[in-house]
Image (tube, rainbow, N blue to C red; front, side, top):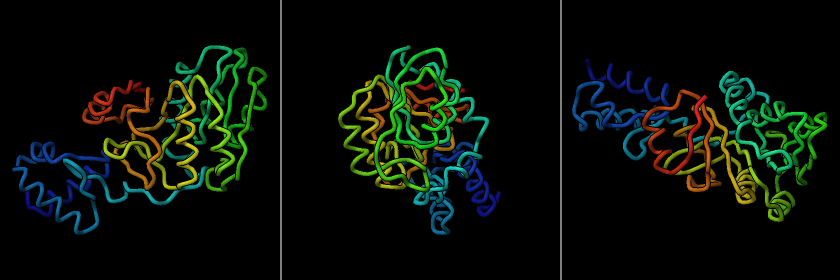
Length: 255
């Protein structure tokens, strides 16, 4: 295989998997790690990939732009449905308190909440509040704040302050990115501040994220891996990703 052909194949793998390591690439293409590093340097100079510790991720993995909530809702719908169903097992018992983050997967979970099990649910997401107003078992609380058009969720000082006064059983959190070196991250600072407060208010933190979010790093970090108790994701998770999540003592549920 010519270097150009190998580099094209590496770029394709990085886009497909989200992250590829030097060692794995050397084994797959039967070349030395030095050869792989030269290929990766060439691809990085072309703007195709971005070097990270031990390998590369697609250049697009460092997300600085948020998509509208309606656009996100059509991405990976089957995986999100399965993740939401699995997250039902993570709910606090009847009578408990639940924090629901904004997001398309958490909105799916809101639609699945039982109508015969009383719970207190607190959210800053207007669409989730709208879903839960019809559930007779839910004691619903909507957090204050300025509602962002992009996420349709309340953010700002009032939102963070209100969360600072709370202690809940479980928080179910979404994320734009989750990586070994950067933790959980999102593009917007106001969103990050609220997510940080959501994590801090909960006894147990459950992250719901499809596998496309792994090894992705958005601009603003809002939580470390040591603050996550459970990750519910899909079977697109790689063995390497599962290993570093396990090393971080995160319980991984795959649907």
